[in-house]
Image 1 (cartoon, one colour):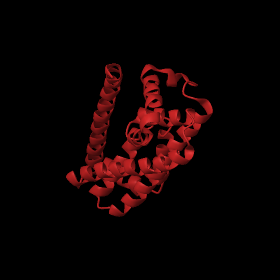
Image 2 (spheres, rainbow, N blue to C red):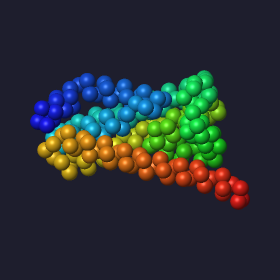
Image 3 (cartoon, rainbow, N blue to C red):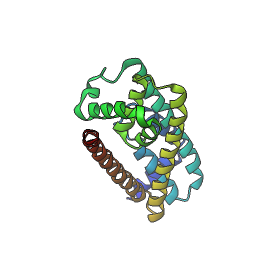
Length: 206
């Protein structure tokens, strides 16, 4: 355990961490299997548990900028290629997310773009749909910046909470942070799925 903790401390102290964080946050904006939340939360938890508070500002800024860039890449892909070009886009869950995003963008675009940032598949679906449907980029860009900043801030808070619980075990604090992030993501995903199921019923009732 001590060897692993020491390895984690060296990794967090390395300047390569910022490059890795930037890369995963950008890629996660258009390819959801990349775990950007995991990297950011774990890094913040380790920083908090070791007293390296100064790291939180660059971590947060890099993650926010990378997230916004990734979301704009997804927007550009949607504008150029649509939402059915690749096989993974036609999987039932992904296709349903695209369909919901297309239906909702006209009615509540701001809240949808901001809220979708917290759902890995949802943010790709919403941002690509926005591009494919001709949503104005001058409106999308500021929303993506706000969404990236808020997502980064929440991830840092999760890491801080985990790091304050276990202040002398970086590995444990990182694990707790990741677990909190996963649970929160699952809750948001379930709430979003429930709202999607209720929407057709409400539409028919109206």
